Image (cartoon, rainbow, N blue to C red):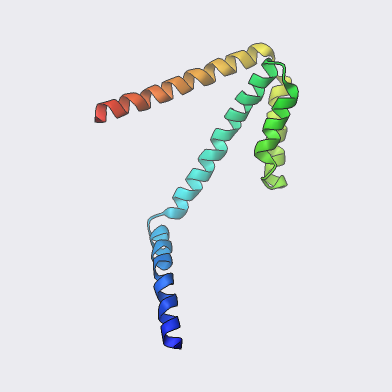
Length: 124
């Protein structure tokens, strides 16, 4: 009976072991850290854009809600410096700067999605 239980446990643990070994042997740690860093780098400009847009539309309370919606679930030691920087950039920037920032953000998005679309069309 115990042997059957042990074999059953081995059967269930084998795929987990194989997945962890494959993750470790194929630079999974480096890829995971790259994904995490890419998210951190991408979220900062997006939040500045979203907060700037709500500020231009006159919804100051909404911009604070957006920042807290994203960072309320993060550890305070990580979220607090980022929130402080976002608030500092938005507080010191003029409306002309915000308009230019929004324009550049939209142009970059158009170019990125256009390049992806063209690349997909060439492969097809």
